[in-house]
Amino acid sequence: MARVITITSGKGGVGKTTTTANLGTALAMRGARVAVMDADIGLRNLDVVMGLENRIVYDLVDVVEGRARLRQALIKDKRLPELCLLPAAQTRDKDAVSPDQMVYLTNQLRTEFDFVLIDSPAGIEGGFRNAIVGADEVIIVTTPEVSAVRDADRIVGLVEAAEKGTPSLIVNRIKPRLVNRGEMLSVEDVIELLAINLLGIVPDDEAIVTSTNRGEAAVYDQHSLAGRAFLNIARRLNGEEVPFLPLQDQPGVLERFFGIFGRRRT
Amino acid sequence: MGFLGNLFGGGRRDRSASVAKQRLMMVLVDDRYKLTPDMLEQMKIEMAEVLSRYLPHVDSDQIEVTLLRGEANDHLKAEIPLKRGRDE
Figure 1: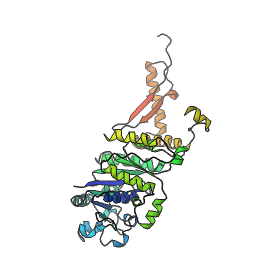
Figure 2 (figure 1 turned 120 degrees about the vertical axis):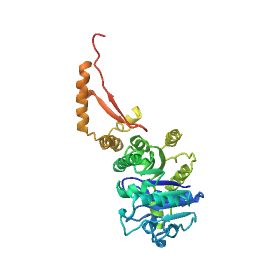
Figure 3 (figure 1 turned 60 degrees about the horizontal axis):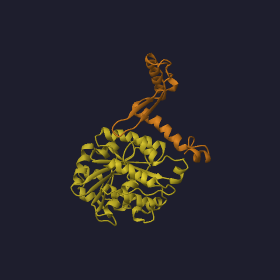
Figure 4 (figure 1 turned 135 degrees about the vertical axis):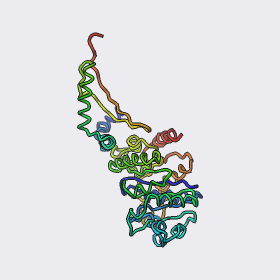
């Protein structure tokens, strides 16, 4: 039976889709059977980020409305046969799917995969609620900015109210130099403000732009720091204890974050 | 920090990251508990009134209220400096 994990954020543009694509790819690289679902109906994007946009025949709404079977709508990844994408509909809106239908859909996926990752739309409305309703766990992606952290806090409350447990946190686009100069919130600041478990730290990395341009996951790029961070997050999702990557110019940061992670995980 | 902080330009108090953190702390209290900065001030004044009935005069300006986040619960922490009584 699969673990169903929703990746959400509140604020748009913080890296949910990139995170979903990279974690899905990384988990599949490690041998898991993975389905990634784009729950952002009307604003489909996971397909282009993964480079699968030309292969779409049916989408999530086609499955829900009975025009296609789930297997027909699932698109196999170009490189990894154990990785599949269930694309969102582009010409419909979030009301095209009900929460019950989302639960039914995720339960269907559960039987065939080890991990089901759901890419949530931004916001706190129907689309977000649909994205978490079938989830076992929720990951919040945020960046070290006031608007993103504020929205993330709101999402923590909504996820807890929906009885999905306390979400875990990925802090994306950290710029160690700015943090060192005291001009960017540190990972520790963000954790202190949100008071949730840290799952990963992803440094700001230009390689993400390149890999997204090409429709290839950054985890394939050995030289990409962000790619390595996503690989580590995938290993943590598999239950491994993996130390946090040392951020450039920040000696000691590794030990401190590992301390937090280790303590809260047990 | 201390010495090194002073050496490199007077500490982090004015750095934008700590400004961001302070602002976020206030905003999150407001978001979560609908407690605005004005209401927080009023709360301090009323706390000072009540406390002054039992203790030497407490000045509301001296009360420092902070919200601490915990994993299960948040805590409201109030620091209230007391003037030393003369007849101990």
